[in-house]
Amino acid sequence: MISLNTLLLFVLALTLPVKTHSADRQLRPCRNEQELQLWLQNMAWHRYDHREMAMVTGLDEQQVAQKLKEFRISVPTTAAKPADRLLMLPYPGGRHPRIGFLDGAVDPWRETKISVFCPWDDHSYVVADIPEAIWSNLGLTWLAHTHVPTIWDQQGLVLPVSEWSQTNDRTLQNTWRLPNGIEFGTTARAERDHVRMTMWLKNGTDKPLSDLRVQNCVMLKGAAGFADQTNENKRFEGRYSIAATADKTRWIITGWSPIDRAWGNAPCPCLHADPKFPDCAPGETKTLHGWLSFYEGSDIDSELQRINATGWFSP
Image 1 (cartoon, rainbow, N blue to C red):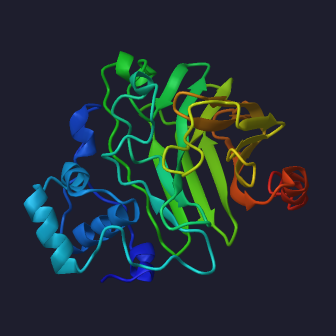
Image 2 (cartoon, rainbow, N blue to C red):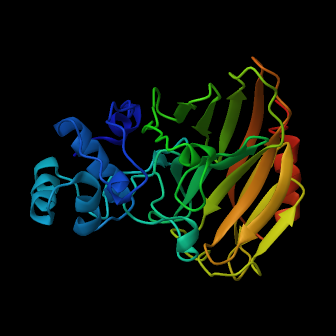
């Protein structure tokens, strides 16, 4: 079986043809056997069945079964989690990361989504969509699924695929360049008990950008004990959005700075700690900082104080 280190060290940036925002965006044929092996191992971590794997790879279910046998990959995977950091992987797509409000996220892109696995079991994970959306004074400038038209949809422009890249065993990064010269990117780094995130935006246009609101979503469908479609198990405090199990002994915490709005979408269900870039003059670059962590215990207030003491929001 392929080792976890090999999986995490592999550079996942792919050169793929431009695709439209239609159902075929879920189909990602691999260029070679090595890529196929890595994505099948990724999907084994997510406990995909053969049908879901076929949807992503373009193979039929019999071919998927044969390749899993050939690569000695089992579902669920028998690979071990890393001991020194949280397990973080690019989200493979195919399976919708929401339970409800699906009409608000048709054909979700995998390029902006990462999976972070909970430390307390071998199967629970959250999917962070970073970013899900970016607004500006120009209108809806970015959207990682189909729901309402972006400024590019209105112009009949199709944005290309840009996969996550991974150059070491704990960091994922992605960069986008939009047709008008705006560039933005996200970096996520897995540590022992949290994930640090950074998002930047460069104004490559010749006019100032303002009202740069960002929507970042942490979807809870895959996390056992957190998938109830309610906000009764959530807290929204300052820069943090927090979810708890029914017995309030396990917690998922996310935050962004500078914060614009912390909230939750119960039907999904998900957490939002949505930040806002400062106004950005032509040629300038602005930066946001993010946090995602897990906590086991009953004193969530002390845990938030501990997190604040790290100063993650003001590096």
